[in-house]
Length: 61
Image (cartoon, rainbow, N blue to C red):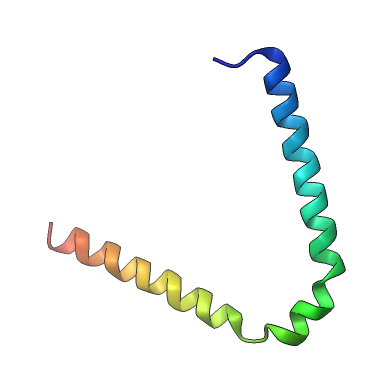
């Protein structure tokens, strides 16, 4: 399916990507806390809405 070189490249790319994204997130953490207060409620509402849709699907199936 994938050659050994492709697998090694994919794994190394993933590790580097996670490190860079984590570094950038830590660097901007103070700005996120300042400008994005209360966004957790949007996430909770979104997850609840998706859960409600799934529940309705299984109830009426």
